[in-house]
Length: 307
Ligand code: PGA
Image 1 (cartoon, rainbow, N blue to C red):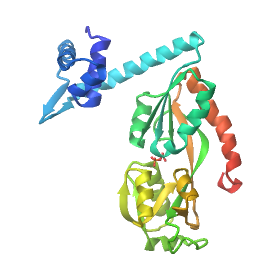
Image 2 (tube, rainbow, N blue to C red):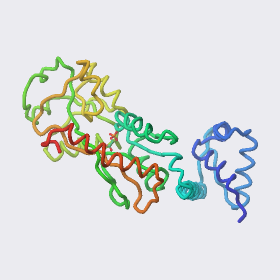
Image 3 (spheres, rainbow, N blue to C red):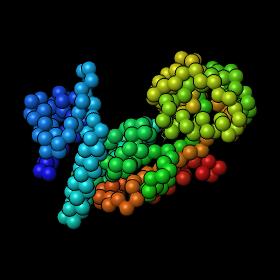
Image 4 (cartoon, rainbow, N blue to C red):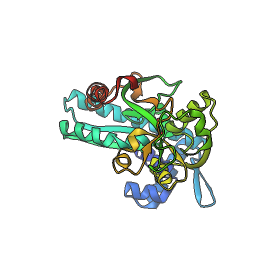
């Protein structure tokens, strides 16, 4: 076999973008140049990598396999670069971090503090859903992942650095807004706006209601915390959200947290990576920053009963 890294790079870009045109744009090449590289790769491997159905292109089974291995090869090359940078004592480079969408409400702030200490570091932040995070962990595609609950069945090193209380939010003039210690059963009369399937917030709230034998009526499903907040303000129903997402609305008096018995649901934020992964100096420093400084600050912010 005589394939080149360049062929793999071009192929991966087409596979990721599901398009020869977009791959050409991404790589600053012409489309014929992209097609040529893919053709040569197919020739070397003696398989078809893509198939065209209508206007769309899809990976063949062989294409999926090649895509899988090319991701691993690039992740190994990144790791090699990191190890060499560490050997050279640079302590700089790139921090690749992938976070669940809800973590986007606090992570940029923490990255800001961190990057003041490492001004030479280039940060690449991917905000995505839990399913993609699990894939990135499995494929070792990122330095660190931040999400609400480490997945089972993957060998990981995961540490808690912050609390993630889930609360029920309502418009300030909601009939339950001034009630204290609202019984859970009363929630069966309400309609809820919930996050999409695959969201960590969604699965923990469903688990919680199931454990407490409460039937939850779903009025709207939305793929973002912002859409839920807007829906609650528009009186479409109550929202189930991480408290981290509503700081501004609480301050501006646009939303309120209902005082419901058994709430908040106590969750945590974890920082994690594959077990045995060789972290760069920068990734290790960011992990340490979360697990020591941030976790200490958070300990002071929350009440002992919420620990
Ligand atoms: P989200 O939260 O997936 O609901 O954004 C992250 C998590 O809880 O893992």
